[in-house]
Length: 222
Picture 1 (tube, one colour):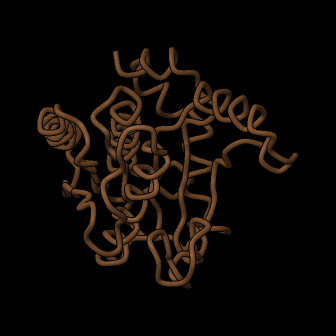
Picture 2 (picture 1 turned 180 degrees about the horizontal axis):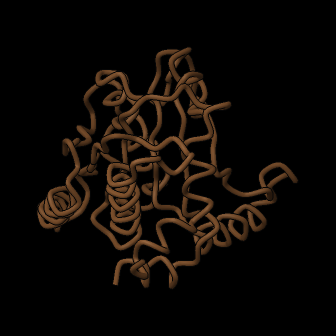
């Protein structure tokens, strides 16, 4: 068996956290957040490899896997190289045979989004919330239930340190969860920016690479 196949087979976090049927309403179509960076590219690669192995195996792997993946790329409408990143995301989606590739653009100032953030504002936080809003809406329209992201172990360390510096509670210091519901809101009022409603209780965010270091994640695709 090739090294890439072994990596795809033994990556327990990908299999366990992505498609744990006792927690997730299983559907054969999986959404993947693609920034066109190395982390989401690694995730697309692994998922593609696992789907290919599933199709080649006459007996199956004993673990439920998606049949197709959909690539979601968000243009935050904040960066000068946004078009270049969008092209790279589209190329990755084609390379790893995504069933579809969706480009989403944040339209600042148009409901439900707030006005475009200026210098000194919490740009990263606003951009993150806008990104999840767009991808969540796209999932609802396409009847998809799980969004996979490329967060890895190094991101987890950074998150915990940032929360520690901000005086977070013990709950916050637990870091990102490998699997969580969208929830009803991102700390927002009903029907405001970041409001997901009851649909958010039926949809999930999975971080299958959360136990994998950034260096190892990059090696996987080489």
